[in-house]
Length: 130
Length: 303
Image (cartoon, rainbow over all chains, first blue to last red; front, side, top):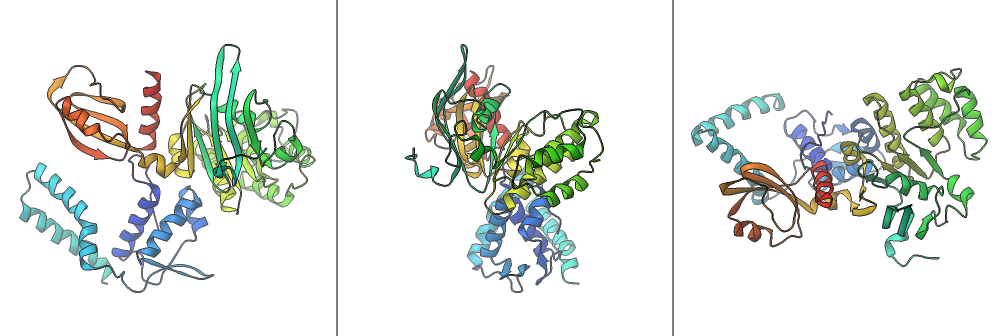
């Protein structure tokens, strides 16, 4: 599990960890049931405060991305998280907004953006479905 | 004496109303801060802001003229044995006797600390790649820092106190120091207090931060809260501004022409209204980095 932390923007470190783990799970680079590193190990690897890693793992657990098995470790959840459809769409809206604004500034039409989404979707999930 | 504040109960270090003068210069001006147990507390400030003076008070090297300093519930000047036995200290330039060999330094330091862990010291010696037979005077700057770090933590101190440990060191030695910080807090209940200019390092490893500027505490609290209290706004003016616009509540204004970036506190509710009055629109809003917050405060109080 490779995670990279940057301090150049204002995104809190625990959110950077949460987002990157979500990405690794969604793209299949972390498989269901796979163990993720213990808090202390990841903290030393990334050179960040263990409390920050603990907070990220707690968020991931709450979101149903990982499950903690008592006394053994933390694992990628077997089942997909159970968010309502509305909650899922709401979570994505700010990023879609940012994408559309940027596309507008680059003079790209909506169907060009849609085509790009299709293309990237095939590339990202080709790995996951193998 | 017990402290009235509830936040002092779990504090390893409790400082209230501490002031210190050196001649006409005010080095510390009514400083109060609490270092919670079990976390990393990062102290930032410019050169000469008062960081080292503050640390010397925690170590009991300076007596509090005004105000109080309590470490593990003791006054470090009155009870040096109780306090210093539980602290590991590394300064910017560890002052190690040059004629001594590394192995002799370890034996010498061991005599001071009943809780010295010989196996742990040997493990660090190996990990840091230090040669026990080498004389301290012939060590490089990075090796000196590692030797200093080794003797600062071989007794597994309850409080690891680092005064600008990374200044002038290469990234590999800095990483060793930060890993020591992480290992210390990962061991249940131990605490780290460290000062640094390297804001990225502070941001990565601290739970709590404080900034001292001209001897005064500018902010002090959980890092996430401090970050959440600040916003970075981009203002767009209709006309080119020759000089940085003066806006009430702005800590720092930077930019050129029609667009200016402003760092301000979240609590400034009337900020957008103040900007509108000047003929500007808020076109962007985001969270500033810790570095931007630091620079904004330093620039703001310098004005």
